[in-house]
Length: 208
Length: 190
Image (cartoon, rainbow over all chains, first blue to last red; front, side, top):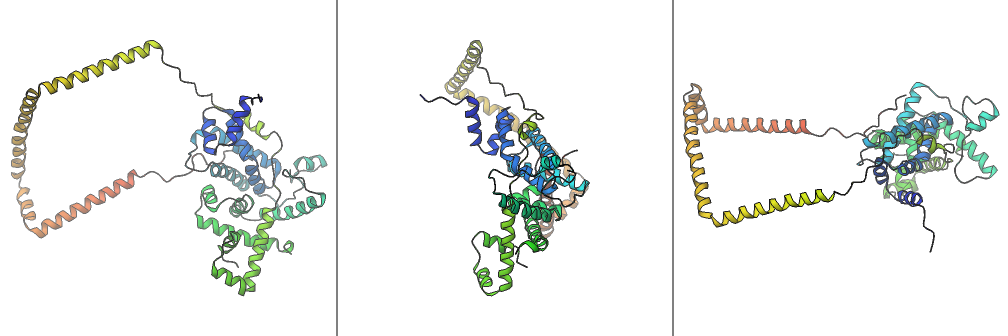
């Protein structure tokens, strides 16, 4: 007879197959695994959005953490007729915009936070790359290219920045971006179009 | 500059005939399209970023997980017996009432008829008295003259109808649900 999975493993597997709305219902009922499942699903996209908006790893972690705490402590106010992703991205974007309004950030290097001075600090704040480890050459090229693209994105207006990140980096649909940013669909399309135009101007030297 | 929707059409693999023709005939269009396509490829190729390990634990340490919903207990035996007793009593009473009504139909009809005639006998004189009182007012004659002319009566009816419709529309607007917004999605307080 094959060994049975422990109940918590089976429950986690069942939650992985559930829709966002179903996971939220389970979380509202006091299921801690459901809370963790929501964090698991959205920690990367939320962190990615905030990081690309503020260009500071430490700050992005703080803002992402605040976003999740705000969302998870307010699940009762979530309305299931909306996408959960739109709700959490909206809060993440608002957190980023709030920060950007308070402090205008400089264009930064991918190699570390702006205030990182020592080698340890630079290492600690360096960008953590995804699952697949690139070759050293790919790593250098990706870092250089990624750094230039990231710097160019950082020069866009915050509204353009959020639109272009959600559309072309996260691959979200126009309708979801409009819902997330509370903008008319036509405005979202216009912002993305203008953002691409500005990026082309800014990145003219690396397109060849 | 490439028209806003053109890149999406090409990325979706569904350009229109006009867009295909423009691609084939205009070098400027072709260059703009290829530049935008290259830019999108660069954006999509950016490395994914992730928070440091233990992010979920740090979040969960500051989240209040509600207590699990209590499981509903089964009713005790005495409560079930009492519920059944009440239900049986109600069923017997209802059944007895139906049986008595069917058995004494003539008597029930007589009682209902007497009650109806009493109400009618009170209502008709009261209504007649109200009409007589209104007709005695000095403005009643003017109203009668106003409504005596079919054209004026039609105008008054139209005005009243328009006012009624206006009122309905205003009421509908007042009772409409507020515009939907994402609940709880306000700016993060810092």
